[in-house]
Image 1: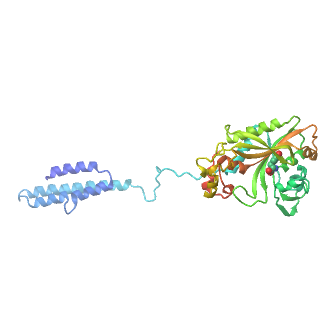
Image 2 (image 1 turned 60 degrees about the vertical axis):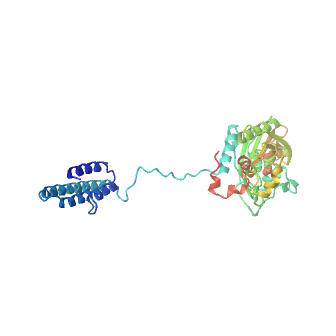
Image 3 (image 1 turned 90 degrees about the vertical axis):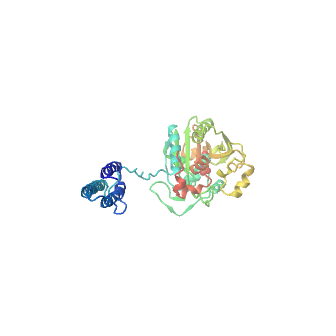
Length: 367
Ligand code: DAH
């Protein structure tokens, strides 16, 4: 290979060298002591006829010098372009900060509140430490009344005196006492919901926690009827669970309402058929229970219906206790458990999951 063509080859190689590694490879290719193209050329010079050697030798050395200068220069440029070791690469994709969000039970409570706000209801809150009068007596459950056994009450070791009212002796077992607290202070008409925590002496299991959340509702006026109760609660159930779910009222008993009824909706797991759904896993956590439920839907115990809430027309005795005229006013009331709604709405099998604070569970609930 002659000097001129080697020079040409280098020029085109250099033009194609993009990276620092390419440049180093070129240095090897041309200048390596062993096998480098220019080194080989210099060896050829040694075996050339004596009269050509000085010229060839000078040309070959000039080429070697040229290649060395070019590569050194380009390598220096590449090094200058390289970012410092501690440089920040502003083109890297950003890392999104972890954004927290509200607890599913809070989301559900907000949703319930916004439904009733749209219907013109007021939201009130009251004490979790309650006295016997508001939790039981004024609700037509005098001492020794057997209905007190419907709820296992947690009593305080010693009464707690507050600025207003009589000393609290218990943790409220339901939010129904808020009906009394509100009517004692304000005249009719009334249209309110009272959300809040309630407590019962229940052991933890799939469907029970000693503390849970209720929303109480109360509507009182001169012409409030059972039709108003049904219309309001059916609209509520459809808003929360979807218009395709069927509803029904089943007679029940509560001392503070007469008549009393429980609202059921058609089961969301089996579609109201009572038969086992194709995917029974969404209902029963344990294989044994799943097997037991194989003949039918475990969520609704094969009835096709699930219970949503308790309700009724306010008992005249409650109106008398708060000083409302039962001849003039009528009203309806209801109480609903937020956890229970959550289990039904999302098909969750174990209420305890809502309190274990495992983010993998809690992050699954958009509303
Ligand atoms: N207090 C009842 C409970 O805790 C729920 C309830 C039923 C509330 C009927 C009401 C009602 O206001 O009318 O299970």
